[in-house]
Image (tube, rainbow, N blue to C red; front, top):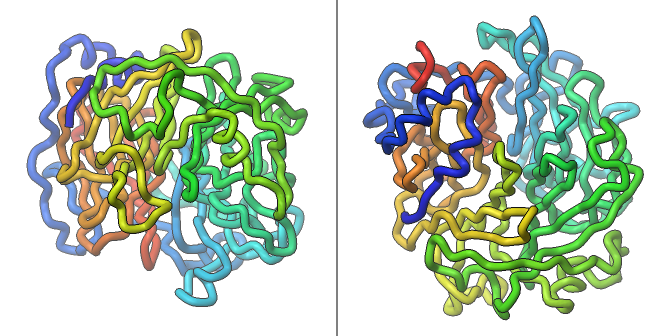
Length: 436
């Protein structure tokens, strides 16, 4: 791995500026200790609590759905923390693999045939789960998403399947009031992954798709920063095009490379089932394809960081996986003021932490990435020099971590493991800059 993460890590909470001023590479917390329960290996001194397992009873009826995925934490005042959590489920997962579906909820269901959605959890300051309930149902393949500047969650469908209604949309979920089952159609109908906002209220969205690869999109709302429901007023959707690059983004292999970008308007952001998909529209107009465009994050300076999880190269077995270059993960920084992107970090082939997916900036002076690689699944720390260290390992198998997010006070990390059964963890310990 090579490159510098100093800009991104600089977005950690101001309360921990003393940590950042040291500017010393952080080697992590030492070797991981095997978990006697076989659920989560962590460094010495760290502990966890597991709750809201797939199949458990929900507080307001029904069972906890499976395939926990993207998630964000929101302050809940004196109570503690709200968590809004995605469930990446489609009908075949239920019928063929026995995954527990999201139960339909009156007034919160988009499509009665959809089995994905979100659940909302209220976790007390002592990390006890007080309640969990379905906040949005009737959606499909809710993979990642992102928090809005007004503290709601945008949940994104990573599919364009048609059930009784078309899918491939973004929906808004309020941690206090629940989800709005009306899709935000102006944000596009495509295989959404994640979303992050600039300080001016412009949204940037990743697309994880193949045949061709997905793109990075920019959504300029008609009513930026106007609060819950405002995105339904519409806006303009466009896709990123790297000036002078006539192939996909994996061709760039040198950290520190800075490239200019322009934005290609999306002619039809809400195509029907038989219309040209959004990515085909914009790639034909010069947009840059990105293999496995995954996590996206905004730093304190307003830069947008996004992940390409892998580049399989021109010799990939499946045609839809072929790309110009080979890598095991790229992390890019988009400067929206100057319309440039910089390759900050490159995971080279053979990296033990291949396939970075969701990323989050910790309040402790480093980045955490959830991996979705070929073999072992890690929570991997990335320091400001680009060095890596293990923070957690899933000892159960190859089920990915997802949705890493910190409580507002920075003392608790919440994260999911997606597999059967899906689990949500609260993790605490001797964080750098905090007492245990």
